[in-house]
Length: 161
Image 1 (cartoon, one colour):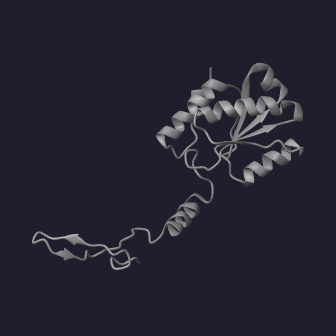
Image 2 (cartoon, helix red, strand yellow):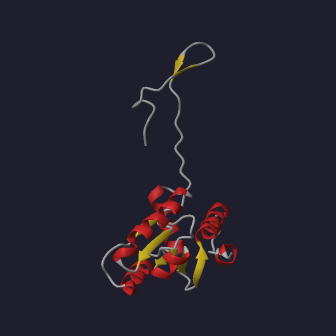
Image 3 (tube, helix red, strand yellow):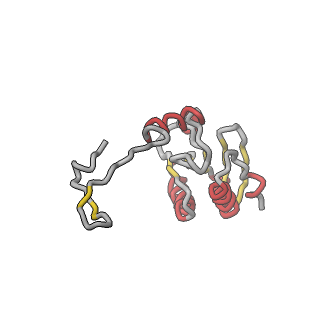
């Protein structure tokens, strides 16, 4: 605890004399580390969409689709959604499994069909999968979910054309 003496703190009282203030230190959670530990334990590492460090992971199925994945991820980032692209030369199943182990709320698969149609194929951690979602509608639904600070991912109905 930092004492007023260490910082040479003082104030002038109503009679014009220099006084040393009294510092009261109070922390509700004890420490930020303890609070974060409680939060991680509460959610079992599976943070809600608005709180997740990475909200959406883009998984292009081959190297030719990486530019489209980057372009789409950029649109998400412009909307304030935190994204990453897994452009490793691994199988799609391995990429999906890695994203699930990292507990990323939205796993977006980018294939030829999605590129041609300008849509998305999205998998959530609770096992829901939707294909053919329009990009702009989906971004709007994700932003709405984040702004509401919802604990559930209720974005699929709102993202439909």
